[in-house]
Image (cartoon, rainbow, N blue to C red):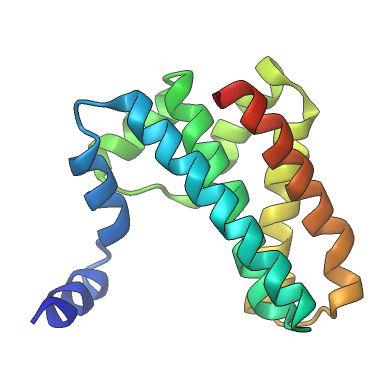
Length: 156
């Protein structure tokens, strides 16, 4: 039954994972930021595993998820308007993530925008279009990894 509920929610455009995170951490913003950082670390480990396995498509998507979670965590930490809008709508739209990355970059440095841009590029060309090899994705993944390293300093 749970699978059916999740399927039906996703068909209606509901981001089930996002809704659950927001509900669980409703009264614990610091906990949500830490959780998102841990998710980003987990996704980076998965991306590296997929690189070792020679799977650029899955490695690209996992690296994108790193950038996505970091932008969300940083936007929450700094209470950006994009975070408030995503919270109200119970969904992070890509345009909100890009807007938040731009604002965060002006506060924290180019590493935020570089990491987000690399993640989104991997999402499009490495995952959706599946046009890139392992060699093609490596520089982009490394840029996302740098974003994770810098983001961890800010979020801890």
